[in-house]
Amino acid sequence: MLRHLKNINELVLYGSISCGLAFFVRINPAFFWAVLLFRIAVLGYSAYVVSYLEDNKILGIMLGAAVFIGAIGGNFDWIILQLTYNQSAILMNGMLIFAIVLMGGALILHYRGGSNAQR
Amino acid sequence: MLKGKEKEITFVCLSLISVSCLFGAFAGDLQGYEVFRQPTKSKWGQPSETFIITEKETDPYGFDSTKSKLTASKYKSDFLQKILLLFGGMVGSSTALMLANIDFDKLEIEYAAKKLQSEGLKQYKLQELKNRIALASLSQKQQFKAELRELVILCGGDETLEADEANATDKFTNALYLSQDGHSDDTVVKLTWGLDPGSDEFNHVKKQFLDFKNGDKVDDA
Image 1 (cartoon, rainbow over the protein chains, first blue to last red):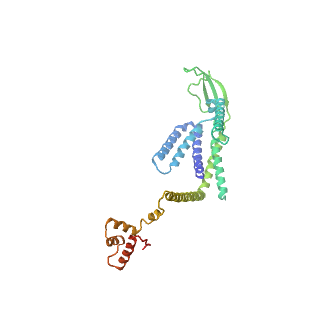
Image 2: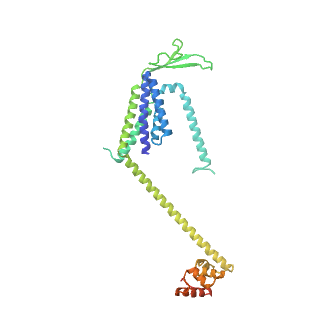
Image 3: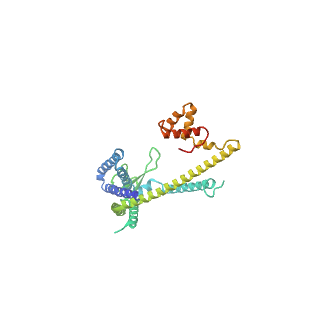
């Protein structure tokens, strides 16, 4: 468990650095291509580590995940999410799906299996 | 400084804080913006186009300022909060990693030892169960044999069958088989016991074998 937490900490460190780079690029768009090339290089290196090398596979996976996190966290803003997705519809559908799953599970537990099963 | 359990707890708390800081930095808007809706009708029946214009983007593709209408705006950005959250995540994770580099290996070893101990206990219990099952099967076998013997006696068989079975590997019985095959007594004794003919031991064993052959039971030589 502690080992996984340590890996998550490393991922957060690399991911926050990547996210900071993305913010920097959005404020200074002149650096867009440089940072894009850097990202592609890091992704390629992580792919090379994961596919060819035997050691440090976790480091390669973490670098790739950090680039991914930075790309998502740095480029998506709350306003874009609000404009592109219909929030009320998402909420409604989610609640409906949740209720359907709960009811189905309760019915299944009622008729087969469980301590209060009806046979 | 912190020790043992306290260190562990601070490590977990710091990692949780850093993760929440990183994902909190995703929310909010980095720059101020203006949202324009431009009423157009495309080939696929799209009613309108939306343009989000920040300070840096002066002239996006297809934007016409005379036709479009301002629908939303936000001029106060969350730049500082986002940067601070990112910084907090970075600092929290790096301090947690520094804590972890000192002596978390010891804790890992302790956990591994505990795991091994519990595994050993499990193995011991499994072995005990196996032994018990083996004993039970053995007793069942004995019971079955006894029942079979009683059945044989009831059907008119001989109870002393068992004794012959037990002595099947005896040297006297083997010698008896050899003599029944047609060998002379001297060669039989020589073959089975490996003694030289003419010695005192040979004569003694031969006398015992002849007694056994004529019907008397002899104990082990």
